[in-house]
Image 1 (cartoon, rainbow, N blue to C red):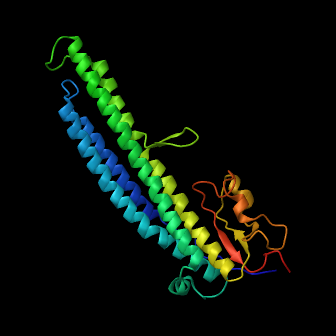
Image 2: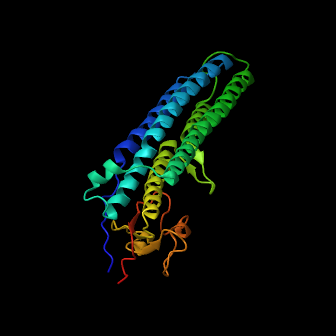
Length: 281
């Protein structure tokens, strides 16, 4: 029976928590800015000033998130390369494996693509927030002016509490729906960012592992185990092919992507490379 070594599971909790916290802070700052608006006497100048501050907050967040992606995707990929080196017995320890880990041509291209893809995903979140906030502020400004004009008054406390509550809710909702996915699900910005970063970091790790393994002549892998309780548990310990033309009746790893029962968004499972199928003689 073929022998392989299981590298330690990657853990990016600290890094991901730091990025998600940045989005939470930005959303909190935007909400505070919107709460400062006096909806009983809201002018277009006040609204424009608020929107300018919202744009500043989001621009700063975009810079921070882009820098985070540029620093952390290569880290995840390097960990993936090291995992392959260790699993295949090229290095005795994972620490030694990290010291000799380098990107081959496939991994260089993969890292660049994942960085661009993740930065685009995160930018879509802030662009959507800004678009929705801008639309909400403009609508609320118009509603506030109409409500006052309908009473023939330009003074304070002319709008009913129900109308004010509705306007406040509209502003809050514009911030808290960071993005709507292809399935029509609405995501809070921080929740969506958490999902995207976890998924893409694990993808970069596994792709780097696979590319390094194939370059070293290892065409098989074993799906990792971590005691999953969902449908993923049926795949733990299963052998897969890292290239479609590898001998044996094993599923090809790329054919498993996009399924609901393994390698789904937020999935923790990885592939441990092996030179021979573990069930081979």
